[in-house]
Structure formats: C-alpha cells, structure tokens
Image 1 (cartoon, one colour):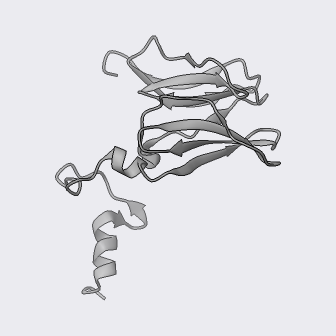
Image 2: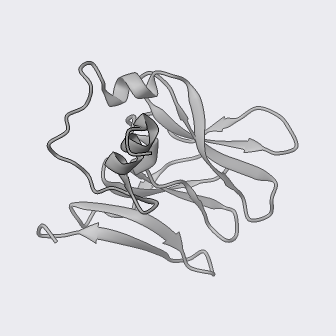
Length: 153
C-alpha cells in the first residue's frame, strides 16, 4: 500500500533490500552524539578465539569503548585496552584473533593496533600511514594485512 508509513520509511532508507547511500543533507537529531550512544554500557562485536576457549569484545561505556576477553568456561573478563575512544558499532571493525590465539588486532583512532590476548603492551601497526583499518591475519599468525591511507589515497 503506497500510503503505508512503514513502506514509506523502508523506501526512504532502503532500495530493493539494500541500505541506501549516506545522505549528507540529513542531519543527526539534536543532542545526538557518539558519547551519548556509547553511554549505554553494552558489550558488542563478539569474536570467538580460534580454539573456542575465549571471546573478545568491545565494551561500550560512557567515555570508552575498550577491548576485553572473557573465558567461555566462565570467570572474569580481562581488560586489554584502557583508552579507546567511543566509536559507533556500525562503523567499527570487530577485534580479530590471530590464528594461534596469542594476539588480537583492532582499530583505534584511525590506526590498527595489536595487543597480546592475555594482556600486555599494545603496539600501533600503522604508524607509517595517516590511517588504517580492516585488519586480517595471515595463516601463520606472523603477518597482518591492513588497509591504509597515505597522501590522501
């Protein structure tokens, strides 16, 4: 039915089942912000370790969206990052386990970082570029493929 509000809404943001292109002419609702969205504490972007013993996830809170691991057998989560800025879930890369389960790759501040899965010092991998994303591990866990931006490309 052409006058059905649900159908009109679907046509506005979807075309043949595919999401519509971004609309720069549509502004966010007044008062909306990433910090407000992230202020609702929630775990997201769950990724199971290669051996199935742990799960990695981002935990959104008021001021951060940090990376944690949790044993699937039960227990307390381990916090791996302490200063990751809030980021919309729909635009964020999920954490990526290395095939050997020893490392996690994630994005933060437009760069790719790697941190030991058991906790430890994080390392920026894309320090040579203006930005990076989409980390994917090589099968031997010794290499990481990433996308980067250099010289505005």
